[in-house]
Length: 353
Image (cartoon, rainbow, N blue to C red; front, side):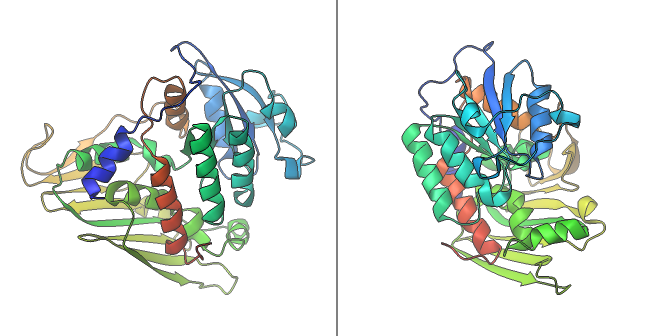
């Protein structure tokens, strides 16, 4: 599939979902499974912030860890505690946010989709391809939405970039260059040691989601993974994605003190370039055009964008509510998410199984 066709198919595909919650004023009844994901408290905060769109039914630990205490401070204070079975059988429940540890994400997601629920599935899509494929197959059967927790999808600068690529402002895309890094604490290094793919797998999955959204599934992927500290953590990584007429580089460095400010995403075509740096909060980008497009002049200019409204993850859940209510198409297809998972595993040096 050609790149432009891939983007249009992904962004234009309305999932024919039965039992969508109709009516703009209807609140989505949602719960959360898990508190161990690095984004768990932030996702719960987003749900609670969006009280006009969501009714929070409760929170549960996954059944494999049902005895693990749920925090009783901060955003967790006052949330109803339930068993997973109680949560999944709650009358009128529409959706569940899956926020377990990474190894347990897919199993919990399967149980939720299996009883007919839409899900927000935090990143990445589990430790392998086969389990995620099974989840996608089940979601297709049940006609349920799987919203992956790749946060850059809802970043204002990235949404501008997606539009520019889709509408052809940059011409034919030839090159993508991207980087995400940070200085990993000892506790994070211990966490990353659990994953063969290291930081590329756990963090740079956000970048790979956007690369695949722009260019589609690569023809080949080469990965370079260095363990600089002898602690079984791949902490300096590079992946090269090859396409028919384009290449993409994805870097991830977990020994970079200035990693957050150096995070970048650049797309170069034969008629223009967009560079997003820093990537968050996505309030500006640099646009270079060979000719005027979309109301923007020829040449290089800095574009100031409206900042995101609400918290870091509010946009994800606002979009989920709209899709469940049938107000809009969902912009990411099942096939896209499968391409991302396969590409991520290859980029991280992990086996495809």
